Image 1 (cartoon, rainbow, N blue to C red):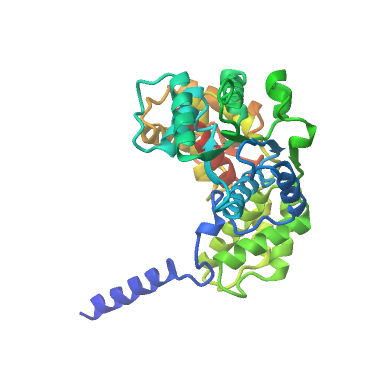
Image 2 (cartoon, helix red, strand yellow):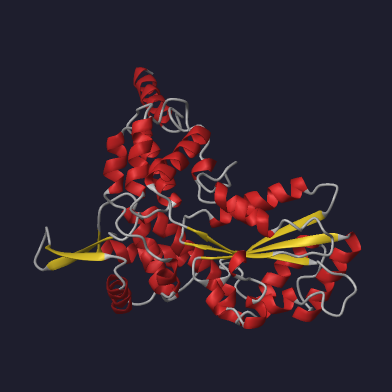
Length: 402
């Protein structure tokens, strides 16, 4: 009995350390998909987009804007907060229906149209209708309800690669030959200089004054972004100004809010695992060593599916360890292939994937003597980005290709 009691006490102590919540209250504000109540340091961008939409209360008017900027510059958050505020501001004057479509996950014309029509009418059949028929259905639904569609196409460069701007052209002409006007307004979002890819007929609707450029964040703004998330996610006093300042400084090399948020999240986890009730600046400094240079999503998108799977396997292990051996990397690759229900490739082909990732500077290789037996083995690390950030980008790329 005494032995059982001692074992129970040991287990209780062990479990008390897990999920103790000494620092973290709500993990959601530390996720990339979370929409905060405000956007730090972007008041001028809100003023700009409001000026573009200043006539939207007129029932026969449509407005269009392109928002561009690097990863983590606040493009998506700006669109979400603006569309929510606009709906609230126009309540009782003009009915605005907002539909957000991520074109990375829905890169074809048919996928985008299906997302639009099912957002407006959940009962609409998913199959059996052509693009023209769906556009007619969208028009009828909006005119019947006397609503205006504010369509946000995030990561629109994926759609433009697939259809060369044909869908945008059709959407902009949806009222042509109709008595009604002002059916759809568009917000298109992209990392690239998307306006260079548009046809003149489409580009004329997105003039220079209708282009909002989101610059990279500086250290002060990134510090305030980290503060905003810490106040929403953590116990009061658990993340000091000094820690927030360190996060801002380390993330400013990239100008990316996502890097600041992930540094905060990982520093909180590190402190809680250590059993502390506050984050230390040293937690952030230790984690920041692994940030390296930013990786553009286009580099990940261009990889083959199996190269992406190999990279995903490495990311998941390297969130916890500094490097991984070739043998362990291949085992992890097999696990990821099973998760995505694809047949893993041979050892030789897997080795080629690793070499591809190395050429793209996504991973680094180090050769060392074996600890047992003869020969040498290679170890891989990820100097280019925080493995957790890169993991999310790879998962997104795999999802969009599925």
